[in-house]
Length: 383
Image (cartoon, rainbow, N blue to C red; front, side):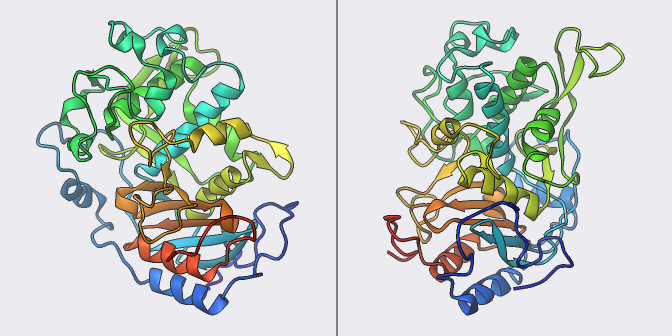
């Protein structure tokens, strides 16, 4: 269990006023130390040259061009947080890394702000809230905010020069119904997630990083090291724009929901863990409501056509996401789990892992080292 000079240091309390008992109670510290030590050695190869790494990862047959910025990766890093306190860390938790598709789960928290402010209703068609040509035809007019966030919109089209049809990962699950109505098929499609980011940007009338910073990151004490990027051509017109945007006033950047073509959220392990801790606490931080508990419940409600997926969060209820990890866990994950934010309410546990291979082994080992709280109803990582 490494100490890292004050940032992610073992014993650091993320919530100064947190109350949850002794964070080391019912923790096998020797097993925990072994688990994190082993994770620090599970290196993802090739990430020091992100351009080459991404080119090898993306299996699209066309439109493969990277259009957003890239950040070279580093060695494995991460933290384990129990009852609001860092109980283990490895590598450099302060190092900012690309989050890849873990960005999608953070996008859902910006939607939480709109939900709590009364700007959107989950089951209301998007076109009633925003005026965008992408929602003008009869199929698209039936797409709701829920469809956008649980990846069941089945929207077809092109956004920022990328057609929905070129995203090879979209067909890997076999759960899409091409041409079918919204809500009846599921596909992991970055173009559609980017459409959700566009719709939310227009809804707020300002860039999503501004929403995330003022409404989520600052209230939970996150650092100023993170950033969120879009593509060179991803812009939206949002009326007069107020005091944001370029000289034209109403033109603002739109971020991407992943790093399929570059961009996305760039964040370090500890700040990502803070986001996990916020969700673990039902949207509250040090007694202050940041997002509603109802939203967290919606976010972790299984999608009817993809039960291991909620509103842009993975759910391990049936142990289909990580078979060797507890069924009580929820996660944000990117690049096959090389970037992982794991939240387990039964153990009052958050794990944030960056550029770590074999994430399931980490989840299994750490979960086995932490006894679930009594009355949680969860079994061990093996049971």
